[in-house]
Each structure stands twice: as C-alpha cells, then as structure tokens.
Image (cartoon, rainbow, N blue to C red; front, top):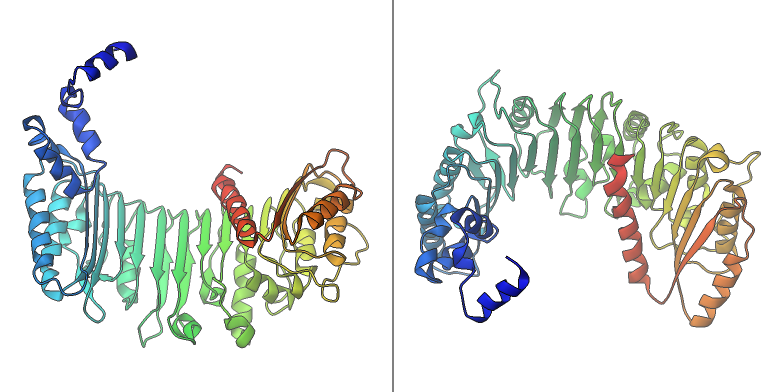
Length: 486
C-alpha cells in the first residue's frame, strides 16, 4: 500500500490499526507494561481479547506510605492477567515490587511457578520487602526449566534448595544475583549447577554475615563476570574485605570489578581474558588505611593474573596505589591494545609512563578524570629510551584534563614528541575565558610532533567541567563497547 492510498484511508477515518492481524498486534502490545496492555481492551470490541496474546509481561508496583490493601489488589491484578494470558511461551517476565509487606510475599512463589510453567525464557525479579533481611524462596520447578536462558534476582536474597550433584538450569546462560546475607554453600551449588552459564553478575551494598565467606566461582563455561559490592558504613571496606572470591573460569573473557577489594580475589588461569575494568567507586579507604602485607601480595597476584588482557581500565585510586609500589612491581601486559587510566596527576605522571613501558603493543591510550597539573607536582620522566609502543604501535591518544600552562603543556609536548606513529591526538580541557582558549589552541597546534601524519583534535570548554566529564565518559563507553571487536 503506497503512502497516497494510506493517506486517503486515514483521512476517511478508517481504523488501520484494527485491520492488523492478531500476531502483529500482540507483538506491539508485548512492548507495553502489562497494565497498559490490558487497557487496550477498551479501545474497541476488536481489541477486547488481543492483549491476552502478549508474550512479554512486565509488572511494576511501588507502595507509597501506608496504602492499606493496595498491595493485595495489585497481586490480584497480576493473578488475573496471568490467568487470562494465552501465550504458551513467555519470552520475558519482569516483576519489580517496591516495599511489599511480608504478608504479600506468599503470592510471589505462585507467580514464579506460573511463568515457569509457561516456558519463560527471561525472568527478572526485583522484590523489595519491608522486613529485616528478607528471604524469597524460589520454587523447585525453576531448577529444571528447559526454556530459561536469563535469570535476574534483585533487591533481596533468594533461597533455593539445590540437591547435591544435580545439574540444574540446563539452558541458563545469564545469571544476575543480589547478595545481602548470602549462604556461601548455596552460592557454590548454584554456580556449579549451571552447565552452560556464560555471564554472571553479583551485586550487593554490603554483606551482613558474621562468618567469613568464600564465593567459589568454578564455572568452566563462564565468559563474563561482574562483581559490585559496597558497604554502607564509614568502615565499609571491612564489611567485605574479609570475604574471598575464588574465580576458576578458564574461558573468562570479561572481568568487571566495581570495588576496592582486589585483595579479596583469587583469580585462576584466564588465557582468553580480553577486557578488564577495575573501578573503586572513589573510595577513600586506601588513603586512610594502606593495605597490609597479605592484601599487597594477593593484589599483586591479581594483576599478574589479568596481564593477558587486551583492554584495561583503571581508576585513579588504583593508579595511585600502583605508583606508590604498594602492590609490588607492575607486571608486563604483552597483549594490551587499549588502556584507559583515571590518572590523578598530583600523584605523578610516572604511572602512565610505567604502563607505556610495560605495554609494548599498546595502540590506544585514554587519560581521563579531572586532573589539575601543578608545576611542583608533575614529574616528567627521564628515560634512556622511549617506550617501544610509542615508537611502533601507539596510534591514538585521548586526554581529558583540567590543565594550566607550564607543566600541563609539557606533558602534552612529551607525548607528541615521542609518539612516532601517532595518527590522532584528541585533547579536551576546560578554560576560564575565550582568550585562554585561543591561546592554548595556538600553542598546542604549534607543538612539534614526531609523527608526520598526526592530527590534533581540540575540545576546549570555557568553565565546562561537567561537559568535560561527559565527553570522557562517552569516549570510555565507546571503547568499552568496541572492546570485543579487538
């Protein structure tokens, strides 16, 4: 049907949407939240039962203050939707419930049983219950569900009875869990019971457990692992520092540790590791309490275990610790191609140079965060020879910095003078005035370059620190997303 004929029908008031077949309408309505999909039944008699064909179910409930039986009414609504749903296969079921009463939890198990019986493929559950250390028991039927590929459990701990030596979750490839008061034996059983698990996420804001826990992640098929744990108190490091993560995943390709407790990790052989992101989330723990000898040893072993990676991102606190040799000598990174450092220049430019020396095949360097170059604190290296990567491989440099004249420009000059095959130098900074912007632009563009094909890109913002941060995050995310194509 061409646009002209379609326009004529529309002008005549013809209901084109009603002419669509049921399978197309169900595809459209499946993109809606369940309550909105149900509302389509009042549009016309044609739509009365179409919503029952949807294959994606998404429910969200938030209790605001004391609302009497609203939670029970919502549970009844969910039950009614499930009862009328005709789809034999539920592609996605997302249930998010904030501030449920303990008396309203009973219906959750029945809800999960229903979607498991309808061959759910992706199950995402986030239950926030108004009770101390809530535990949600999962039904046993979920263990043998052959359709379940993705399982995400959030906000509270879940309990599941896994028999010894039983292979569970036969098709599960993605698992995301929230831990608050975890049982390490259950965690170990869960990880080992997933025969084809490829991606695992562990998240929690603190671990409330008096016992020392060992998270034994022995999953040969695992390719991606992300761990995000933080405490709530001022001594939040002590909430989790005593626990241990033992990772034995030979096929691991991606590791993301969003914390400051690398000493808690014992990482086995990872010959296929491609991407590592280490982020302390701006914790002040290191500056207040330096690591002890055991932490130093284990963290040094961790860095040696990830030395085969091709993509590495470190934040400023870890860089500072490495610079002060608190974890021993920095290992060599022979395969490293992309390096993102949250360098804090007051701690010295030396860590950057050390990484350049230890990364002979580096091609892309990103230096981010808000640094202030200080004439007395920036230390330019005195080297007998230029790092080999700068002579042979380093093609792109991205610098996001708050600089002043003098030593700040000396760093840029050093990078340009020693990068012999550089193709792109992108510099972003903030300045106080348009005059400063023009002066810095002229000075940088006239700096000598070792590479005859190097192009300089400048992003100079007057007082725009937030814009500078935004540009840095965009650049980092862009390279993160492209890391697996290396």
